Length: 290
Image (tube, rainbow, N blue to C red; front, side, top):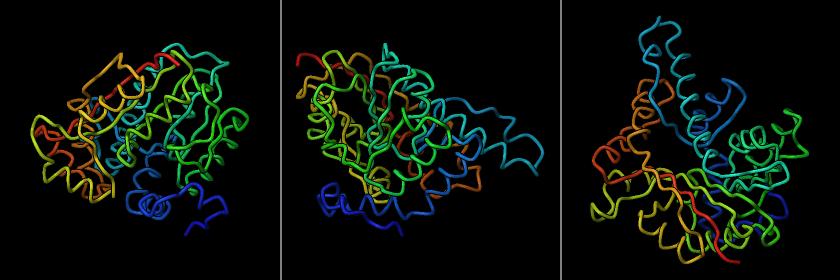
């Protein structure tokens, strides 16, 4: 159990936020997937993957099969983070980036390595903050990559101080209007926000049984697709790229069903994606005006 520090009351302002923080501080079942995959190369993610797996992972010798599957799953999740960073635009070493809901910091370290700039990560999990800062020290980048126990709805960072912001599968835990209001405040004019998220498909009607199951499992609030674009427009964030990654993520989930790390969430994800009630989107939006 992670001990709460004196700042907890100012960061976790609702019972729901406290419950989400407790889940990510103390959930060994889902966490073992993140830790096992991160052990492949020391880059720890908290999201899923995209791309076609190497089928040799399933076809080779049985005694090393699980090791090959784990490496492939990790390669696919790293490919997802790399695609996200591709859409941040022209980032220079003097710029500052923000990772909203930074987890164990994998994408933040990739961003610093690619762009050479300062990266700040925020998360309401004190355990994740400690783990990620330890990783920054181990990697020798603690002066450039820092993780903070802060709420991404109210970061406390200066207005207009950030060139690029991303969220990677974290928006389903917050109110989008509040989130994009804060991100719009933080971004300099012309700055960019990139989001990868699962969202329910408004076209198919109400939330499906599989989407509701995912919601209940993670204690989240999956938003409909339309809500993202409405909230972005309300806060001067104009989409420049929208990519449907649903077909690209299905192979990752199919491969995960073959792993000893499977947790039981695989079937609802695959059902929801294949029936069309759930979509996996990348949205890149530019800040317009001041």
